[in-house]
Length: 312
Image (tube, rainbow, N blue to C red; front, side, top):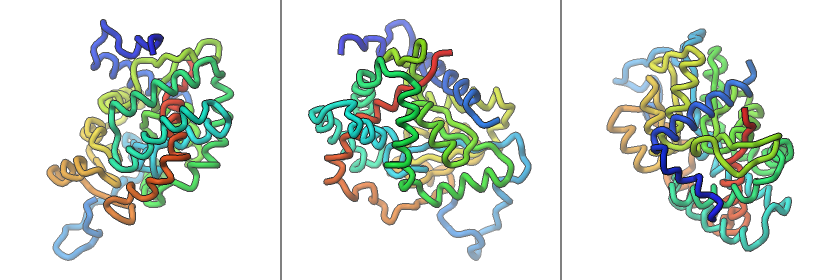
């Protein structure tokens, strides 16, 4: 796609783009916010853990990844299903996206090349559409495809932080608008997500920086913590993917939730808490045949939704 040469800028390093994406996500999140160990607690021979989260600690907060951490599957893919239903793209594109969803379910983790393919497709799909239009559609799609896919266990962890008086943020590669919808529906504080450029309320097909993925998530959390006067050593972060090790490593309380094999090994090596709410270690593989159909749509969404945001 010749018009997407901006995706690989020549003068700006990957680190610089990550910082830009992180700072943009933090700014958008603040604007849109609403102003384990595997052994059970108390097991013989295991010392009692201190109260966590600490009630009333206003310099602590929690950061939750979205895909496969709070929600089963990828929000971007589910969003794609809704866009296909609304004829944002045709069946040929649907079939092209199908294998991406199937791969995601099989691998249970993110793949940079596949994510970029989905993102590129989505850019072309949302370019020229109004931000308000996709926001309205996002509300509908949450009810249709996402609400029933929230992991109760992870949702309870987020609620524990809220009950302790702490802020809870989603941190995801999904567009900040979509992420904000999900955060609001779950009663969370707000969301850091990929920031897509728009002019006069219309998407241009460009991102601010790069997708909020990997190191960019860590930069977003760092920027938000500075703006909110948080002490990261007292904060918690939750994710399923080894791609989020930079974010998890920033905080004093990292959790591996439904972890992929790399994150599981990393967490065990460092003594991080682990929680797995799936019915089996390879639960993500269930339902692959179906993924080839409607799942494809989700793929397009992955991109479609990876690009929403208002220009400051």
